[in-house]
Image (spheres, rainbow, N blue to C red):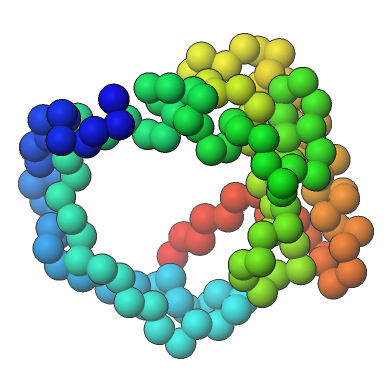
Length: 146
């Protein structure tokens, strides 16, 4: 089912959705302030309505079509559960990588064994990344709050 026209979507309607500034461009100055790479400005696109039901994500209907699960030339390490990818020509950072499962599953249906292997893997990847010249810290996910 890759034909998006077969999904009957409509704007989400709840108290939360009704108060969103749909169609407006939000002020992004808080995102630009204090970032280590010092953007002068960030311009956001106008907020679009959230449509429900969501379209199936890549690989949701057919795991064989899931890009993150598929073999990749960017895979630099893997075990039976996880893989680490790096080597993209993006950004200006000394290292950008990604940890992803080798099979298609959602967080809520992953086995305890798979989930338990993630923490130690993140520690090993962090140590390896910090060995890259010019890298003092490794961030797996960073959210900036005002």
